[in-house]
Each structure stands twice: as structure tokens, then as C-alpha cells.
Image 1 (tube, rainbow, N blue to C red):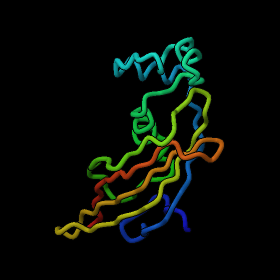
Image 2 (cartoon, rainbow, N blue to C red; image 1 turned 45 degrees about the vertical axis):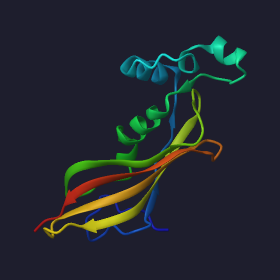
Image 3 (cartoon, rainbow, N blue to C red; image 1 turned 90 degrees about the vertical axis):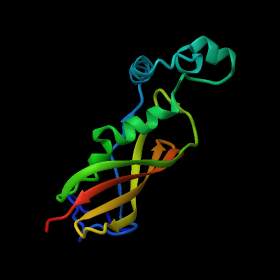
Length: 154
């Protein structure tokens, strides 16, 4: 597989190009800040004694934390930047929580182009990409499809 061009244009981005980001470690602070933001104070996210008694190991981040840190950070943008004009994010679909996100895990993203659709106006195009979150052991933690619209020069 070839890497996603950096920066890409409509003419240089192609299906099945893939790039991998650098790693990022999930910390207790990350989990705490996300709980504060969402109000999701469930014991699996904040109570070490509860987790120990339940035999579940370390506290776990909420599943939606994975989407936020994958798409809402500079992690993905380290491999996905267009020189064409960015128009808008279009959404996320088929996002799956496959394994828990645990404090201390280091993950990276694999970003693969799975769609490139020129719109009727001939200028705007939609890039669909599969985002795979992989931990330090090679386990896939989460995955999903994200779409964004770009505008090529006339």
C-alpha cells in the first residue's frame, strides 16, 4: 500500500492509500478530563477499587473518548492534510468499540482512504477514510469510517 500524500489533493489521493500516525498514551488525566466534560462518572471509569473487586483490571475510558481523541485531535491530522480547501466534516459511521481503552495503553491510528466521491458541482469531493485505533500489542481497540468534504481549485 502507498501512503496518503501529505498534503493531498483530489488528483493525488487514491483508494487504499494508508498512513500510520505516531503513538499516544492514554493517561488517568485524559480519562478524568473526559469524565468531567461528559459527566460520565460510572465506576468503570473512575473507581479502582470497584474495578479490582469486579476483576476487570484498570479503569477504562468511555468508548466515545476514542472517537474524540482520534478525530478531534492533531493525531489524525499528522497524516491527513489536504492542500485543497477543507469544506466540512461530514460525520462518522459504523464506529465500533472492540476492546476497552485502558489508562497506560499507547495507541496509534491507521488511516486508510476507502472512498473518494466527486460531487455534482465538479469541485467538491468527499473523502471517506477508515480509522483504526491500534494499541501497543497490535490489538485493534476501535474502528470506524469518517467523512469530510474538500474543494479543489477551479
